[in-house]
Amino acid sequence: MAVEQLVDPPAATQEESRDFVSLQEIVRTARQKLPPELWDHLSGGADSETTLRRNRLALDTLALRQRVLVNVADIDTRATLLGQTLATPVFLAPVGGFLGMCNAQGAVPVARAAVAKRTTAFISTAVKPTFEAAQKAVSEALIFQLYVRSGRAWIEETLDKAKNAGFRALCVTVDRAWYGRRERDILSRANVREGFGDPKYQASIVWSDLVWMKERMGKPLVVKGIATGEDARLAVDYGADVVYVSNHGGRQLDHGQGSLEVLPEVVDAVAGRAEVLVDGGILRGTDVIKAIALGARAVGVGKLLGWSLAAGGQAGVERMLELLEVEIRTAMGLMGVTSLSELNPGWVRPAISATAFGTTSAYPWYEEQLRKDM
Image (cartoon, rainbow, N blue to C red; front, top):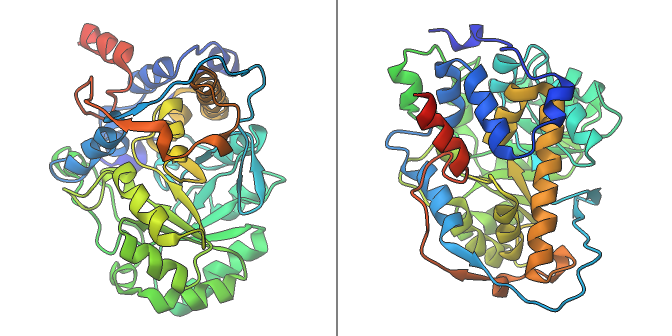
């Protein structure tokens, strides 16, 4: 099965997307519309999918604390990332080639949805039609995410294109030196490729390469794929303006730690010298609040972005961001919090999870409907 050919399943119309009243409806619609191979390509993880499940485990084993009799009539959900004000601390993480597989316009509707909802998007080297087209489609500068496909001359040419296209920052993904064994793709015989070019180039980049990449682009540097305090310190030492905690959605190293489990270690290591971002299993507004409480500046959604694009195109992504904002605002009000700046580690406590850990375990209604549909 050639996943590259599974392009543009029919999305919900703009009017239908507005009718989504829950993130669970968006995910169910995506599951109904996507071919099984493409659903698995987005939703699965590496090997035993332990890291994938640990992303949810880290989130689900934290409880939120609640304070009462606080005036929460006015709640401020805004955050900043590299000086840009975001309507909520949620951005659209780089998803890469999947965008073009599930939508004929690829990254263009993602870029437009981000700007329409006053956030930002990371646009990958691998997107369709091109990363330049995605940036050209909007009036706000986005963030370019680099995969290394060839040698230094190619990298410099690519960075020049990104700079000339108007991107405001460079994100270098560093956790994909080898392409993870994503066994759902392998078992379905899906023709999912690592990407064009010789993979040895991605495998060969080292810390010092970040220095000349940043100099060539002339923009702030985001280092994505940090999973230890040691590497967080090195990232800052080599010029990172943003340290991005991520395990590639559980799709690279199997039996790694969950992103939220790593986050406090990274925040401590960075010690305020750079902004900290995180992704990995973020499916609910309460997930976002937990990450902010533990020190993240903002939180990325990847799988949820892919499902929303498949369900409703640009309108589906916009509705997903709206629903996340509703969830964030509601949770803050019930916690007795009026601003994200009030959040700190004291707002969370270890807890026993009430659910089994899975890709969609945050959506019980969806999982009930899925069982009925079988």
